[in-house]
Length: 174
Image (tube, rainbow, N blue to C red):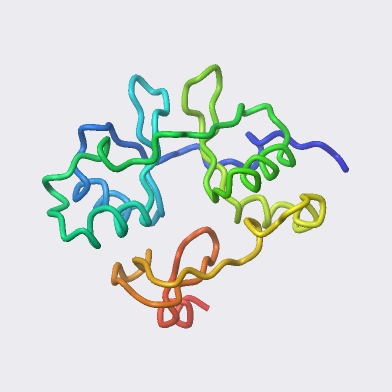
């Protein structure tokens, strides 16, 4: 298989915030930009990631006021990253091994982009066959979360083009 660096398929304009940003502001940013996560940075270096699942499980389900919760308090701190010149197959293996769908891309420790499981699957559906456990790369379904199109908490969201979408929005987008 021909090797292709992650930088060839990554999204360069990553939505970011600082650890001191409140969750309400981060959620609004995610909604406005149509993304499912923000990478948390300090001096352009990624230090964590905040996903819609983090917001749902750590803020909404705990009935906390999002404007009073700091991103740094609920973000995923054990951040896995990959260098921009690394191979796409290595990115897929990392994502599978760590059961993640989003992988920040760095150049010398500085955030350069982000690659998602959907990016990899769109780039090369054959990679799913190459990776030993490719459950991360197939279309997944989530029991209950926030639809990234309408913003409502819904049952049975599906990942479509890297976004978690409810059934109603999936039909209107299709």
